[in-house]
Image 1: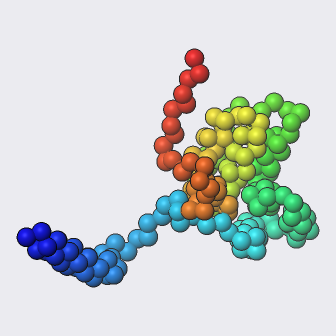
Image 2: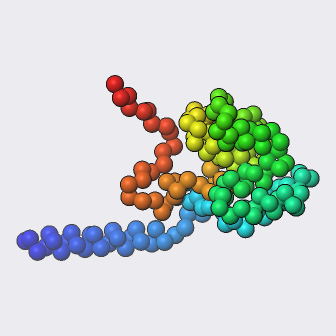
Image 3: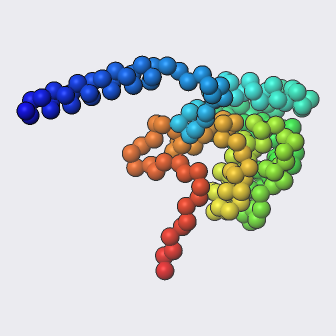
Length: 187
């Protein structure tokens, strides 16, 4: 009696596995829009980022070859900083805000700059300038201003998404959260 039950359970399990294998192999064509998540974010290569920024500067009529190459010559700086400094060649207000946020002799920023909320800017430009500002503000412990700048960006447009938002994260790195979690009080 027990053998029959086990054989029947094994047979039903195999039948269920074969039935779902055919369904899983079929691509879902009813939803043509791609779904993006944090696991699909990839960093741009340096060459691709440089080409994209040069294209945007030429479209704005602000491409200066000497200044552009000077920004990209310093390979010790991060990709985010080089992209932001190159984009700032076309946006003087962004350059002033980034310089003020990075300057340790000035007080930390007390609000996110206006370009962060400017919807007329290209999303690539706005996101990467906001990312550089957020990085500088967080280094100065202006966390609210950094968070405001990060919330204005589009993660898919960032040249270098945070490593904790990718699939290649370490075991002790918490996964990215879409909603901010409350900070526990120390009292």
